[in-house]
Length: 376
Image (spheres, helix red, strand yellow):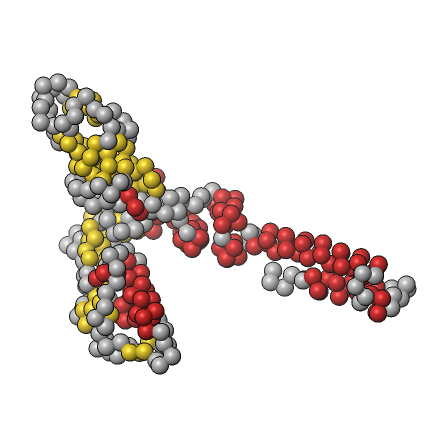
């Protein structure tokens, strides 16, 4: 509804009508600010302008293309009214925590909501009780959830090393043998709109796209790749594997268990689906000999190129091959940048990940003309 009438359009329409009416208002009177007829037409035009704006807003919520452009609540109302879909909120990371002790002379209860922390202050709470019976030293494992949402809770292996809650045995030791995974920010308008577009495709159950969707809509999962097992003759072997990862390209057993449970509503009955947690395979990118037009701000363009290259690589699905052409396209993002054929030094060829691997990189691993980015 881009052609909705503006304030000026409505005023001019009223002005023309007033001139044509039998009253025959003089143009000079109508155009005189503060005259009675000028005030009446101005008030009417202002009200009409407000109504037009309201209609544009209402019309934008009728179709996905326009609702997606507006974003926010209009997009959420469209998704719920048409498909019963809701935006994925910010997610907290989950992690399996392992507890052990030096003496097993008595039974020890580690109750739900026991808090443990990393050295940099990320706190996790256990979700169920854990009992170390008499004689059991551990380690025994229980799932814990970060107390804050977002990717700040995606801690490394061994990062959780402090028990904050008071337990009956002060010698209890905690650690995480797996990464904390699944922490991510609220789903963006772009990602939400893309999921809405795939609704009818994914409505059918048992297909590859439906199973992939069932994995991705699980809290904390950003990417999923569905692989159908085949026998030596290329015939389906009645097994499916799904490799999942969070936005950092990784997963853990807790996230795998959540996906496996959620896929009960998406997989074909009788066909087992094995869920595999992704393992990030970080690669180094070396770019040399990039030149710039004379009007270019070289520092800004190098920084922007690095960000675009990182984003292009980190958008790869689990198990997807990184092609050199993907990186080269990302490098040629601006007409101010001159990219010679020999600019991409490393990788020298396409990179094919092993099963379960997710190709990822960081700004610190992308060297452009001898400079690298920060720690992220």
